[in-house]
Amino acid sequence: MANIPIYDGNPVWSPTYVPFGFYNSDLEFQQDAVKVARFCAQRLGWPIENVELQDANFFTAFEEAVTVYGNELYAYQVRENMLNLEGLPISTPPLNNTQITPNMGNIIRISEQYGTEAGVGGDVNWYSGSVILTGSVQDYDLDQWARDRGISGSNLEIKRVFYQGVPASADYYYGSGVGLGAGYGAFFGALGGVAGFGGGTNWFISPLSYNVAAIQEVELADTILGSAFSFELINNKLRIFPVPTEADNGVHFWFQYLLKDERLEDSLASGSGELGAGLVTNVSNVPFTNPVYSQINSIGRSWIFEYTLALCKEILGYVRGKYSTIPIPGAEVTLNQGDLIASATTDKEALIARLREYFDQTSRQAMLERRALEADFSQTELNKTPMTIFIG
Image 1 (spheres, rainbow, N blue to C red):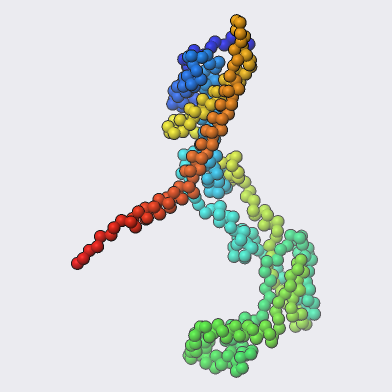
Image 2: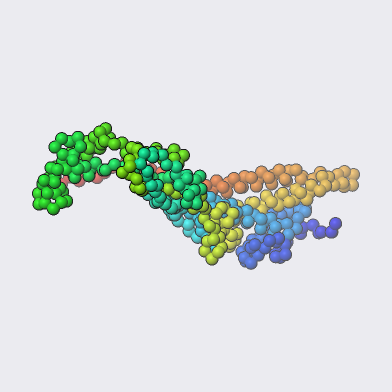
């Protein structure tokens, strides 16, 4: 084993003592590394007691403490903003000093699936198809229709079937007035036009509620007295009512459908991103880097100093744990390895918990809640302020 001298209390900066060198080019990091080494040594008992550590141990612990601080800070930033960052190109410059404003982009992307299912937009194509009716044939197999066109039947999902009778409004204005006695269609035709439609010059004006009630009456009459235009769709087997007649031969029966595999494929981004760099898809590839030490304020540096001390305790405990006792003339000395490691573990856990709590208290949600409480308290205070009464 090398004969390493006892720590002399005079740390000297050297980049070779820092394992990763993340912050070696930062002048403030170099200066603080020396100060922190002296601080930790004195907190561990030097010069009253020997400290079995060297500059390399102190500088290593200091670099690790800065890195842990940055990891906790940016892990919090990712948690706070992941919904806004997902889908960005990985080639995006580091976001360390970027102000991230919430946006609706990913919320809209997530909600597009509802538009697809409702048929009012979305990100999955709808296609049109039709079967040709045959007189006296009531059932039609749409899976077979799909296979005839090179589409897997299990991949077909019918979204809309276009099969309904004449709209009630058409019967109301232009038809024979089923169930209405004299027939409004003929009556309005005699007037030569309704609400601006038709070629006549006469007008018939009535409350809109009356028109709506009349249209509803026509619909009910069609439902009870007329043919029931409806269909059943079970497992892509279509049954239509009423049964087609010979007059329906060759008529196209239209429907809209989508392909299930396209729904799945469209839910996955290609990952190509801009410049072929890929997309941010999870917390591991969000573009954050190690912090710039000189930009960390005194609050952050104070935490880093304390965490460095806890790491130095841990290192010293492991060093002293190599020998539980050291013989001396006429006796032996018991070292405090257990105390150092226990204290270091407790300190590290408490520091991490304190830092995370601090970040949580400064989250966007917590700040908005605090602002709302402040507004409520201010309003309560203003309500207790006497209002001046002016008598003119």
